[in-house]
Image 1: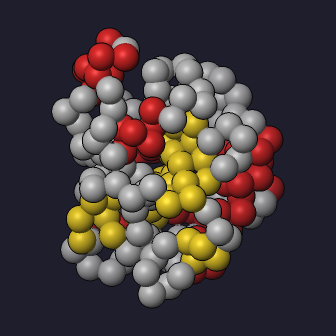
Image 2: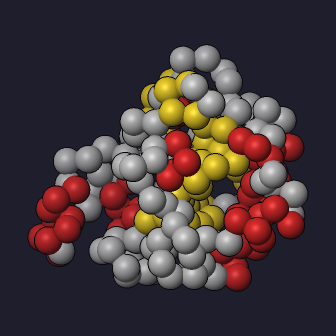
Length: 183
């Protein structure tokens, strides 16, 4: 896996472009936000996250899909249970992952962040393969964007407290600290 600095796309991983992005207001990339997602909720390996990020989720397949059908969201990356990484949005662009958010006194975290979704839920432990891929991806992104210091790797719950809970209590922050990714 290697980041192409000119395009913001990583080589060596799957690309599944999402239409849910726009241009960053400036070139700053200084925050990494970790999320979790599963579609339907609590189900893994369905391929529905990819469809959701591409605005083609089949609403007739699950009642929850009908509830979220009008949402237009994306993340830069998704790490599935087997550790496979998919990129949806160039790192140079603003993915729509954080929503109403604030970090270090600054609102609209999408403007200056990268979003990584882990296939999972708040209360189900993430897989070894996911942590291995997450560590490799984070280290590569931190090397490419030095403003993403260990103190600036956060959960969605940190930037949207009271509104979001992910990556949740099952996420092992100590494991990332041991890899020197977070402070």
